[in-house]
Amino acid sequence: MTKSNKPVIIWLLSGCFLLFLMVVVGGITRLTNSGLSMTDWHLITDTFPPMTEAKWNQAFEEYKKFPEYQKINIHNDFTLSDYKFIYFWEWFHRFIGRIIGMVFLIPFFYFLAKKRLDKSTIKKCIVLLCMGGFQGFLGWFMVKSGLIDNPDVSHFRLALHLTFAFITFAYTLWVALDLIYPNKDNFYPQLRTIARFAFVFLIIQIIYGGFVAGLNAGLIHNHWPLMSDGQFIHDSVFIEKNSFILNLIEGKSGVQFVHRTTAYLVVALMVLLYFKSKKYSLSIAQQNGLNALVILVFVQFALGVLTLLYSVPLWLGLAHQITAFFLLTAMTYTLHRFTK
Image 1 (spheres, rainbow, N blue to C red):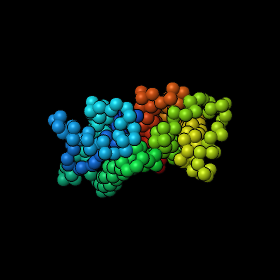
Image 2 (cartoon, one colour; image 1 turned 180 degrees about the vertical axis):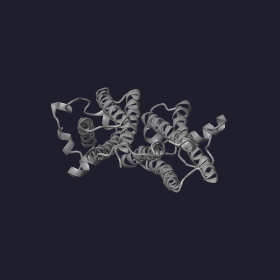
Image 3 (tube, one colour; image 1 turned 60 degrees about the vertical axis):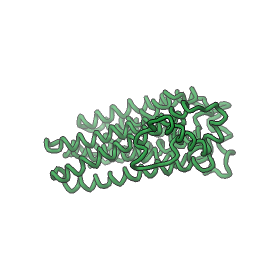
Image 4 (cartoon, one colour; image 1 turned 135 degrees about the vertical axis):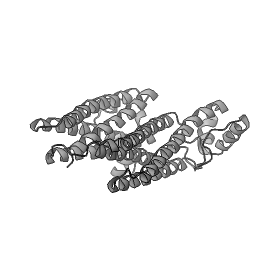
């Protein structure tokens, strides 16, 4: 890392932290059923929540026009105070998104003007800018699906929004790592191949985590290592939908089955990478990445089991999502260190 790159690296890592915070708040928003509380989206207005009781009542009356209130909360003695609680989390989630936009754009143009970015980094930052804008669109695209007839968002759109946030974070971290480590470590093609497979299956696992969250599939089959009735593959995996494929992407039992079994594969690939690496002479950075990876994958696996066994309490569901973020961080770092 050169001294001239240090401000740029701090800027990129600040963006990583804000993306992490955004995902954490997004998890709270999902787990508290707050995501449909703001029924419109404006880039400039709604920067701050309603400031008067009259404005709060106006927002609450608008919320009452939509399916979540009409089909669910109208039966729950849902008050203005309850509405303020769910509104806060969705507003805070969007507010962090605005902050991320400013934190990215203002320093980006400053560094451009000061010629602190080389051509390669400029191209990567433009990609990041496009990814950030697309992520904002995906957020509204997701929310919109729950404002028509069904008082819940599409689990496909939820998974897309969640996964793309993780990927945006991983790419931001990768760009920072390119500057932190201008010189590559020892290159071993076999280890890089295993690391790439581990990264891909970790992303698949994150996608299915979004499916599980969107379908509330963590509230069934709350047993481990087997599903209900002592079955490894429960009968319900095959009968919820009209085809085998639909059962695995739309059925609650099928989605949970894929998520819980893919976890074994993710653990196996990361453990394989760790033990295969023992044959090679690794740098300190490579070894540290592998150590963190193995520790975190077992912590994440244990949290996943506990989250399932206890039927997704808020704190465990959030801890599971946060640890997934740390695991992706370690995976991105490790893959970067093993990439030519």
